Length: 350
Ligand SMILES: Nc1ncnc2c1ncn2[C@@H]1O[C@H](COP(=O)(O)OP(=O)(O)O)[C@@H](O)[C@H]1O
Ligand SMILES: [Mg+2]
Image (cartoon, rainbow, N blue to C red):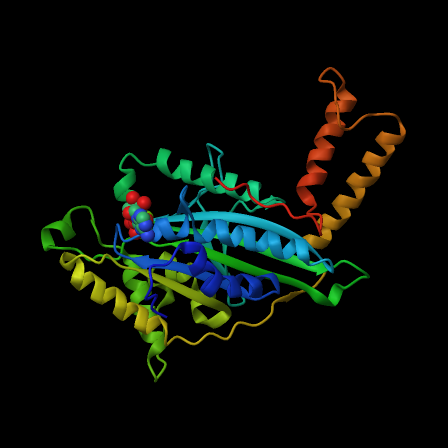
């Protein structure tokens, strides 16, 4: 779809992305990309700006709004944030000094990353804090941040697990991934000289993405080279049809960018021909993290109730009391694990 009128990101979100978020709330994987040359507005569209909310904050609001109106299901949310730079993966939410680099693995056709921090979140504020902490890590890790940001891909994922509130409901535990991706700039190398300069502007992952999309639209299906790059390997399941996909293409209107604009439009045309067939993902109760957390929540609730009946005040702990400190930690943990239904908790607007 071509946006003919100047349109704000929240409008784009409502018309094109909100239906995918709704599907993700019901167990269908969803993936949103921003593709285009450097400076054309990918990050502006995905992350946003104080003056205009981006797709990611809109989606975060969308997820929590859906949770607050769904009185029948309990949810567990986790987020992860991966950067792919020069074909190397980095976990932007792992703040430890000595950490193992994340790697892509495959098990029974399912692609996953390990080790990877998946932080449990229970408010929109939690999510936005993690996102900005992750972005900080990205800046600190690079001396050439501008260059790096135009050459790295960022994959922000919200993992959504849910179960019916009433009864056992073990046959209806749903799990989905909502991937929100800010890609590197799509411009090609200008000259061989530049091409030799430390691989400047050559982004293997983007080349591979274009190739994979081309192959996916060919009538006669041949081998799809997902493993040619980290990005396409990471997104193998999603691109292979296991996810609903929305590709947002950003272009620069100036004449000097005409050839890149044409390339981007061609890419958009190709993407619109890719067929997806996402299925609802159901989990067995043994594999559901939400079930394990249910037990943890019950245990914490019991211990907190005992503390209250022993006269400990949870709302005003004194720093000198060990019991208060323990109860305060337990309460924090309990709050982190529970998203109450029916209470609208939106992210404050800037
Ligand atoms: N629709 C828009 N309205 C106003 N400013 C924009 C818009 N799109 C991009 N910009 C501005 O243009 C600059 C480049 O955008 P950016 O999103 O960083 O590009 P990219 O991520 O594609 O390299 C930024 O300063 C951004 O704030
Ligand atoms: Mg950018």
